[in-house]
Length: 214
Image 1 (cartoon, rainbow, N blue to C red):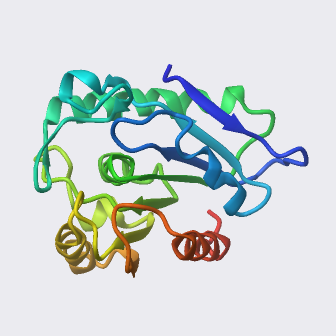
Image 2 (cartoon, rainbow, N blue to C red; image 1 turned 90 degrees about the vertical axis):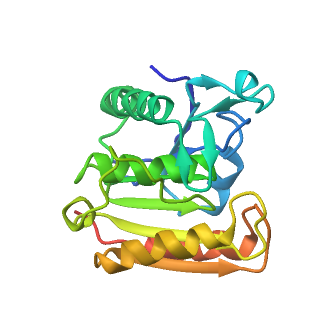
């Protein structure tokens, strides 16, 4: 099972929103925990850690979900190993929670956002909502980008127009492909670099609060 952190509200109840947030490259399971205070109250927040050590790929002492090649391409083997590990983790997660959770919101920043989107596309119907924060739509033959894969998932894609790590052009092209398939896509751009801003957090909270329950 992936190493993880979990924040459970004192007044948590059955049906609580379950937010699983994936960190970016070279960080760890603690990186996105501070976001919990900005998300809808009553939510369970879980932050698993990527299975790949970052150091061999030049990502420092932290962890990663895949090895980036260039543009929207990654090393497929590492990505799909992470997706399989995440699938096992999510299958076991309800058993460690004190209540029966509601719809799954899977999201993340940078590599985490890319991985969350790839997971939803490769496992249609398992994710109610995706938060892709400064990630991209991966170009991989084993990640099908089809209308069937997108039919049951809402997507929030936020990105900085000044992002020099995951260039905004990748958001433009990835979103265009999703739109062409009639995805339930919310797009937000911000005058920032590779980061998460207070404005974006406010937009995320509003979007999550309006999410239909399945």
